[in-house]
Amino acid sequence: MHGGTTEAAIKSLRYTYLHWGFHAWAIYATIALGIAYFKFRKGYPGLMSAALYPLLGERVKGATGKIIDIVAVFATIFGVCASLGLGAAQINGGLSYLTGIPNNLTVQFTIIAIVTVLFIVSAGTGIKKGIKYLSNTNLVLAVILFFAVLFLGPTIFLLNLFTTTFGSYIQNLPAMGLRLSPFDVESAAWLQGWTIFYWAWWIAWAPFVGTFIARVSKGRTVREFVVAVLVIPTIVCALWFNVFGGTGIFMEYNLGLDISGQTLETALFYVFQQLPLSGILAFLTIFFNQHLFYYVC
Image (tube, rainbow, N blue to C red; front, top):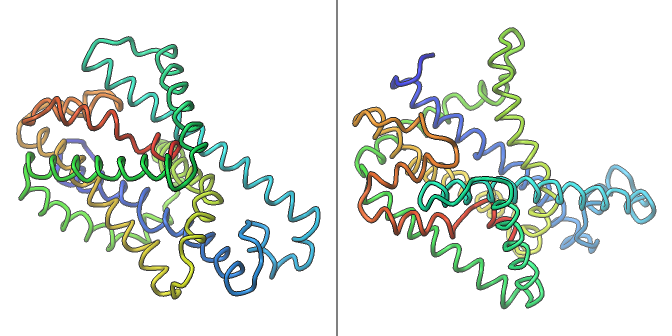
């Protein structure tokens, strides 16, 4: 498939939905539902090991259970490291593009150090203070940024694009989810670098996020749980990527701008420069960063 075509534009968003859609959130939902069931219905502690009681029996209360929980902690550490590294690179790329600040490891380590301090301060003040304020502020910034780009950009195009691409995603979901390309080396390499990487990342985060979701799901039915953890987040993620990715697609496809020629870290800021209030949008993006949001909040 050649780039710059309608088919390529639809397929790009379709695979983005695959990476951040039902498959991804199902990983969280599976872990969270298992932990929640054994915690609130069976009285077990809210640990990964408790969810494996049907398979391991009383062994989850001994050394085997401790090993499982330790592995879950290290998996979370790896997920945090990936989020922190990607977030620092994106912020550094944006600052470099906008202000000329060098885009190098020194600046990125500085960003990581600042975020680490914020994490320590927020964690030290507890869930009801620092973490709560950071989370709520981040959510407000995300909503403002989303609607700003939606209404400042090609609104009608984005709404039509979402209907088309999300429908294509649902229609092709089984085939995309089972695709491995055994006969196409180039496609297989792409799948390893993107699809498998993203799903491994979600798996690494699953013990931490699954435990959190389980703790806030007390009193919900399984049906309510599935809708809240699987369906709604998938639609929200699809809308998010449709608005930001679709705006870039519109500018390249209809206006002839070289969006795809930018780097991964600077493409979004290049898109913002073509919109009104570009400085405000860039500012919100730097302070709202989904990768660092996972780490801090």
